[in-house]
Length: 444
Image (cartoon, rainbow, N blue to C red; front, top):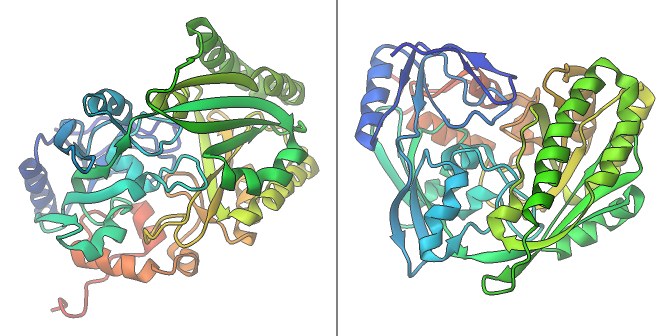
């Protein structure tokens, strides 16, 4: 069917695909890829549209994979679960509960599909824990010629570091096998603390706490910290009261904050005092609940985001430079800056490849133009050897990304082998990876 106008959640990208396909199984994905290639159309799978970059933009054939969802197989002995690629993360608690399992780590948004989240490098926080893609032990994907390829520890194992975080460039994922862990609780402590003290202690806290993150509201000297400690599933739960949760999540974090952002876009002088008030209101909590209810926050206020991964030791100074930048430019920034962390991993295109990582994310209300702010912050992040999040806004290209990723050319070689005709290309992937190059042994 001809596609309707598609927009991503942050309203930073839109496209009207030539066709939309909704395959119900792997064979249907194969047929769609082959048919598109015969018509010289590019194919892009799309999940929940939560990437702010153009990674999922499909001018040719858009594949909606939501029919490929749910539990495909479970190996209870190894705690491994195979999920359809279009499974939304918010469904996982109910899907995994019968087996007493959970994801080891999660981000703070659960609207994404499992394939979309892993393919773009969703990471959550926790200095000793890797991003979501590190939990993948197997995958099935349809490659550029319509073949079905299994990648796991016994089949094509050499491709796992590429396929786990493949940017949608290697093929269409149809299922993923996740290494889960026994279900657990998290004890969450949220506090408003002096920014300087938080920055001074960031390296220690990010390394020693299970899951540590903080938000800093520009124009304030306050950081809102969140420290989550892992507890066994049989520990005593003390969830937030229903009314208190509604006040925090719906009234303050979403309802009131939406109005604040809208007002700040019209009357910028209101932003600093409102930020100071928000930092006081949003920084107090102490509760214990099942892990997904603590990891995940409801984000109803639309925004646009840029996030950079830095060597962890660079984060405090980088944030101080962002503070100085905002002061010197006289900007009024209503959205907080978010700081998180992740352990080093070995996935070739992971922003945490080969180094313990800290993340600095900046946001703007979606009705405000983020270009000037994001460009200036990006310059700071690049000066600290930063790598951009693949699902967030940035201006990097293959030429300057290649030195940042030691296995960049290895990944591109796999892309060129699995998709020699460039079926899965789009404008974003050509920019960040370069155009597909037909391998010399295949050239005619």
